[in-house]
Structures are given as C-alpha cells and as structure tokens.
Image 1 (cartoon, rainbow, N blue to C red):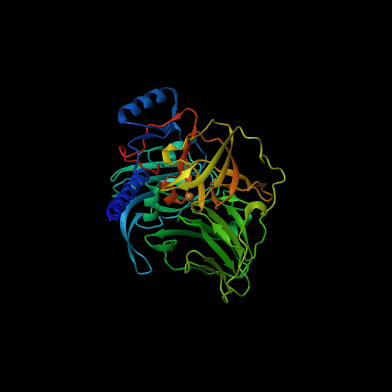
Image 2 (cartoon, rainbow, N blue to C red):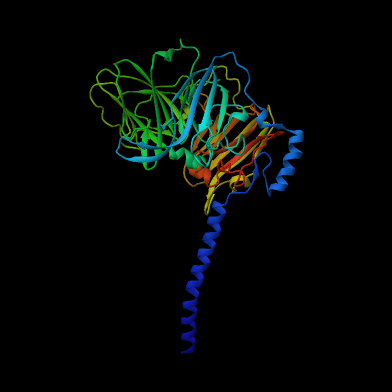
Length: 489
Ligand SMILES: [Cu+2]
C-alpha cells in the first residue's frame, strides 16, 4: 500500500520533471542555433568582446593587406553603369496575390543586367528603406575582394539612405545572378535578386544568332515565380530557329527540368561552356540552388518544345509553335561525368595540389555542419596566392547541398572517386546529393577573404557556411550583432 503510493507520487513528479528537462534542453539547443556572435573578424575568426578584437585588428592590419584595398584592375573595355535601389514594395503578382516584397527598382527579380565580356561594370546600390541594410553579391563572377558584397567581410551593410558603388570587370561570358548577401537567407527570399548576363565579345560566335531566353526561378513568399510571373513563359519562334535558354535557380531547393518535343544540348554550366556537348533526348536536368544551366534547343518543324520545371508545375517554358508534345516519361537524369569530350590540349587536368581540404557537409541536432561544426566555429581554409587547392566534398546527409565558392571557379575532378571522362566542368556551385563525394580543384588566384557555403540559404543560415582566407589579408569589417553585419555567419 505504502509502496504503491510512493510510486504513484514519483510518477506524478517524474513526468513533469522529464518534460521540464526536455523543454530546457530544447531551448538550450535552439539558443545555440539562433545565437549570433557579438563580433567576429572573419579574417582570423577571432570572436570576442569589442575591446579584444579592436586590439587584434590593430596587430593584424599592421602587417596585412586590407580586403578594402584590393580593387579591380584597369580595363580597356567600355564602362557600363547601372543603378539598383532596394526598397520595400507591395508586388501584385499575376496569380492575384499581393506580396510584401523587397525589390530592386520596384521589381523582383530586379532588372536583368546585360553586359559584354571585358566591360567595366559599375553598379550603384542604394537602400531606400530596408532596415537591416543590404548588399550586392555577384554570384559566379570572380570580382575583387572589396566588391564581393558580403556584409561583415568585404563591406558594411548599406543602411537606409546610404549607397555603395560596385565596380568589376565582366571577364568571363556567361549566365550569372546577383543577390543581397546581408541576411541572405531572408533577403533573397524577400526578392532581392536578379540576373546578370555577360555576352561574349566575339559576336561572330556561332550562337550569336540564337534567340536569348533568360529564365530566373525564385520563391517569393509562398509563390514560385519565373521571371517574376506565376505563369509560364511563352516564346514564339520559327522551325529551325535556335534558342539559348539560360536557366537560373534562385530558390533554395533543387529544380528538375524536363525538355519535351526536341533534342537539346547543355552548352554551359554556371556560365562556363562545355566542350562538344552531345544531343540529349528526354534527359532530365537537375539544377541546384544557385546553379545555372544554358540549354541550346533547335525548334522542330511542327511542334512546340516544352521545358517543364518538375518542382513548380505551371511554370513551364513553351518555345515555338505547333502541336503540343507529350510529356517524356522516366527520362534519365543528366550527369556531367561523361558528357561532351575532353579538350585535346587540356592545360590543367588533375595536377598535384599544393594544399588539400576535406569538407563533410552534414547536420547535427539543430544545426547544419561542415566537419561537425557550424558558422564561424568552422576553421577557414587558409591558402596562399598561387597555390593549387584540392577540396574533397562529401554530403553526409541533411538534404541536397549545393556548395558555392565566392571569388573562385573550381574544376570538378571526380565524382564518387571516378574521374570525369567528358568535357572539363568548371562551376561555382556544385550540387551534392545525399551520399555523394566530389573532388574539385581551384587556383588560388584572387587574393581575399571568401565565403564558401551551401546555397540552400536556409542551410547556410543554420551553420553550413565557412571562409577561404588568403594569408596576409585583413578586413576592417566585423560580422555579428554589434555591427549588424549578418551575412549568415
Ligand atoms: Cu545544404
């Protein structure tokens, strides 16, 4: 009787106690996940109170080169000027929804910037009324350190009423995009993004006659959009005409595309041409977050071509005229491992690296991790100018991880241990599916402080973000809650 009573009492005490412990543990981990440091110097990863980092800043700037002083080289090309003003705008979407968006020049996506290879591009960013501040990052364009647009690393976030002018040389033709890199997981989703296309200087190139179609996908609020529209895109065209379709994934999730009605080629990835790309038929194209794929499609005689975004039904791209092609069922998934042909005189295929890094992308309880750590707790990849750097990347779970490097294009050497057999593949964003391993190589030829992170920006904001730092480079900027520079660190 007595025994029964005490076990009953311990039951009544034990359950709430366990619940309380559970709540405390959960709050602790949520705090850990959400807590931003007060101040971090991303050049040396010191995070501390203001006074200490002040001292660290002085000792370092005495010997180093500031990122601020690394500016673009002169070019003989013409100067192209653009103005982008960030502002809060209520956008009336063509699906009937009104969205509280953040826009460039009152639109989302912002205006497409179209320049020519070799141009000196000058973009003045103004912030009308985005309270947290904004920046512009030129995704895929290897700009100078001071122009990379990462708040707290290469500049302070541009506050309401302020402006910042970016200058860079559009040195490599291709499909790129721009987006804010202040609280990027929030701001890109709110609409602060757009396309930038660098046309080749040699206009006599074979493809100059192809019809140009840019297709930028984004998620705004709960709506998936294609070039700002919730409806599909219709591009009229004649039989025999060639269309260059520039697919850009500005969302956080991988998008799979099917092409029905004609064979097609993948002529470029992340802006970089592929060598002798073969004709594909019914192959599905997986475009990771942040990636770009350029497709070349020759319009057939009497039917349309429909490029379907399997992840966003209703956002199809219809090319040409005539009857409607049926959907292609069960097509293979595109793989660049054996696509196209090798270059006959390949200059830099798989040479010995000067330095190697292993990055395991994964997750633990509430955070996304690289080698088991998150944010500024991940040691930077420290490199020296001129070095050949190999990086082995493994996806150990937690979804697709499209890994993006700032300031550098890397070459993919192997997938799951098997060397690439086809065209050389140069990317700035590599899509890693669960369990996949890739080895990539880059040349450390752009001194600076560079972010490297998952371009599922939700994952980046949960910790999957780190730095690649050149020896001797410093920054006067600080990330953290004190400065308000929060690039997702
Ligand atoms: Cu990820």
